[in-house]
Length: 362
View 1 (tube, rainbow, N blue to C red):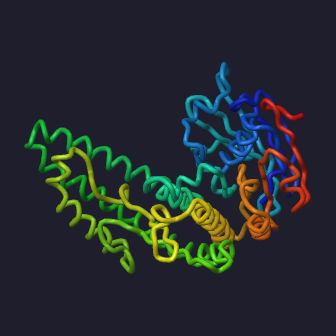
View 2: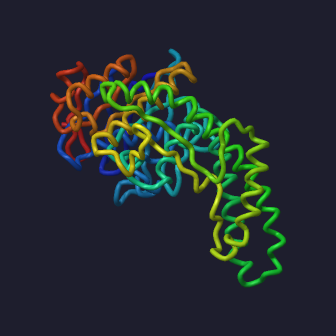
View 3: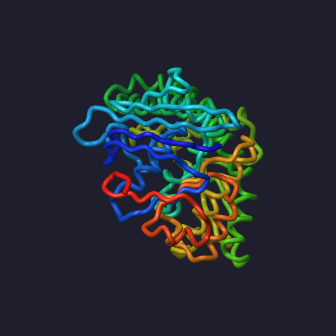
């Protein structure tokens, strides 16, 4: 997989820009000049939302009505092009044909993003770790995004009903309907998350062993309302219904659904201890790098294509041995690296450089 060029118009601080790419692309410049914006624009073509957690309308350049992104790329030696328009929401075309949604572009273009914001995956609460799993599954399973939307819809309806029950207790009989709907969608999400973690773990362990030079061992465990291991979808669904039954009184009192896959966590362990509670900053950073490299390796194995590697301001924060270790793992992929000083990375790998200032190319 390779992106040959990108055209950007009225995106973030970039008014107009066109770039032609090589296999290794170094994007450098001072802070707040638009380096990350360029990486973000490329990442949107995976069908995912911004990795910076902002709404689509916030991506439009101030004072403009819409943003437009266009790339030319190759996938399995087939030349293609895609375009994204951002107004109140994103719309997309692939080879001139409108797609049902921008997320559909993810069927053609895969990427793994490394960014300092991903340190929150270890440091913060369960939501970031769930998002890591769900984003990865969205790139692997075409129907997973729809499944998440269905679960979210059922959860919203159940929570609205829980609030109404406090005013009108006669509505409590209706909660059983949403319990079943929520359990049906939730069981499929739990099953796929569990299977993904089981597939990811061997890669993550091996990479973390390399980053820590064999001194430490990484482990991952899904934490939910009951034990998920070795259960199929039907068994998980039955267990979820029991959990919702048991928590119903508590949910009515709190006016919110207190259990389910929307509350699950992926615990990250170093030598059997919580990386979040006991890991040093260096250990936490190594956990994130191991998980992201493992995500890329698994994506490559399952799709039989190299994903794009988008490295946003992470290389300069690592020592030379870790920089070299990462680049050796992605040496056959197309790489986009942002940094303040191009020489930081160019001493390890030759590449094409782009000096970005105030949203433009110097």
